[in-house]
Length: 384
Image (cartoon, rainbow, N blue to C red):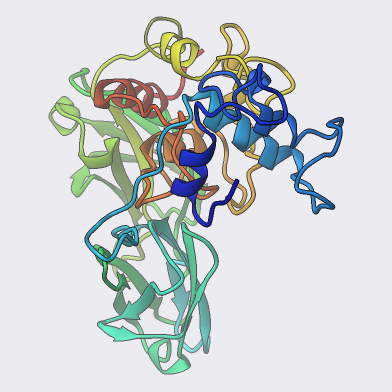
């Protein structure tokens, strides 16, 4: 059996009878437990493969089983560049830090988003800066001391070359005047809602709030009550959540009064397009597409998504996937790919992979309606 790429492997194994055991197929779609290729990879296999090692670890074995149980789909590539897949378009979610005081010197800026590749390049005000690839959702960029010498706002973008690729939208990196302490938003309560609901009050907790501070909700300044240096309350009109914004998130910032008018880094507030519950809308998707034999159907698999177990396996649980940082599997009110690992996996494509690789469910992507149901559930707080 000879193969030099994924497609050749697929052709040589899927629905092909095993020479070593004629009662088994090398790969029987949907059944890793009856696929000789998978069985030969297991620790207790006689003549375990790859011959002589190094052997696949448990995470890699789960990936193989997941591909088989998803139907062993044929790999796809783009034909637009000699069969090489196109680079994904880059997107930006956040910068860390998003602001620094003047005179701080050179800054290493963490750029968070999705669709990054090794050749992605960070630019500040249109000029490329030294960039380090930390994974498909994180880059590091060196901002020179000359750019932080004086108070100013700088535009940060990511450019990925062709094939595919493109230029991201920009985020603002702010250099503040000396002695100006920025307000910091650490918690919103509630952290999300459903589009079309009536007016509500959001409590904002953090540090550095001054009397007279105002809150901006998705670009609109709203009535704000100062409670203390660590708490504000703001009234959100129903017109501001009449429909779900792009990405199902609204941005929230706090601005202190003049003369400083210091503004916090933006945080997100989830806005679901409609009510979506775990029991009625999300669990049936998990049951049909994820909690299947060999996949997410037991405590021995990462994230048991069977009924009664999925909530505890997802919400506020850190992902164990390599390359995904400190991300949660589901961050309540965090429907962006850079916030919730579950959202990243269901929105991933072959040309825009998740932080840990390809999309889920393997080989059988969810419909747009199914994806939106999960996004809406997360955006409104992932209620149990």
